[in-house]
Length: 561
Image 1: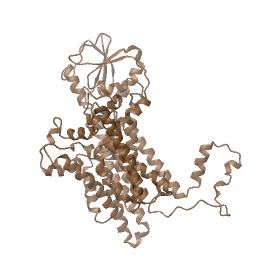
Image 2 (image 1 turned 135 degrees about the vertical axis):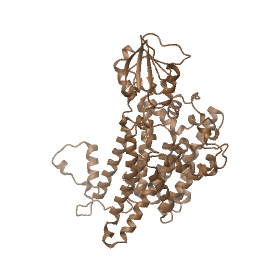
Image 3 (image 1 turned 90 degrees about the vertical axis):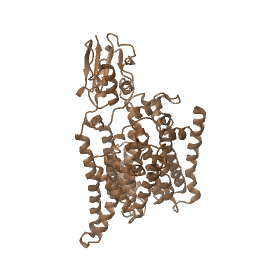
């Protein structure tokens, strides 16, 4: 549904035929001429034709933004990596069996693993099943930021904030990777969109009491799903109450608790049945905070200042870091001048304070949360982008209105300034993403040539009859398993995959061996495994014949003579 701009005039009614009746029922020229237009297409045409011009433009902008986001996600897809992302994907495949390859806290985040399992049921253990859930989550996050920016400020702010949310270096690498942080952020943002619509009494959620109750139930369901995906997202839940306070009757707000109760009871029962511990996920997550080995343990026993300034370090690691730091400063300062910006500062504070406190400030020896990775801070990003772009828009509009010759163009000028404020850091991030291919993450984007495993799949599909057994090291074999069948499932190869190591059996004559990233940093773990077996630098035996190689030798296939 198109989101209306809070700064536009009320929508006009449909044109009448002069008798006071709406002209919607009049026969269209196409019908009078006897043109045969399919029913669904005709209904869409009629609906668009009756929209005011302003709404048509808004609908076109919505569609263009949505299409652009979808294209970016497709072009910049990332191949599977043998780490957390495949742990979640494999946990979905093995559910409810216990994992042997990952921490229990990952297996218990069923808000992510169950949608992944559904994708696997439809598409099999394939690349599409791996990509579709995070792509939908990334798409939802960007579009929900667009909706929030439009409803809070102006449509130009929505477009600009959505662009910066999409393009910034903290979010971008996780847009096509099945990890919980981005998905939980997207679900929270979707809940806030509905809550803000209820606060502003938008017709699509507030036209009737029934619609309002359904919207409140949806808010509760989204919040519950976000908790099942990443438990730390509950710190931001009070934002919903802040938006609905004094706008929705307190008794009616209790409808939000219904799906939350279902989620809480359902998870407790499930954990009790499988793990004999109703609070299994809470306990596993708390133990995970301080467990492990370097580099995780390098973040223990630091000074309070180290934990308090971690967000600045994280922002500073990005190419557009200076701009993101300015966004953070703008979020804090803007709260003194605008209630809307103050709301966004509350969003940032509700997340920042508990994650830093539990991430080591309170107990440096045994923190309950980890704050070492960039993706752990993703719930802050929508608040920062909206506050920064919204602050620029408010400032420019206010200054322009003070000048008589600019007063009538104040909103237009503010919109241009908002778009430019997002375009600069987005352009900096994209330039680094396209040119700095030494960075392993940038090298893995499909748009930058990171399609070597897809090339291998194409080769295998044309040589499937002559390939019966494929060997790969224990790291490489995990992503490889997604590329020995079709992109959306379907078996074109009937051979066997074997894990190869120094202690395993040797490949027999006629067998094939896949060596992945042996001469690049695309998969550092795969390279180390290859070096452990074949030496450093990697040197295949003379009895192996190379039968396939991708660009830059990222994927090589050998056959034993």
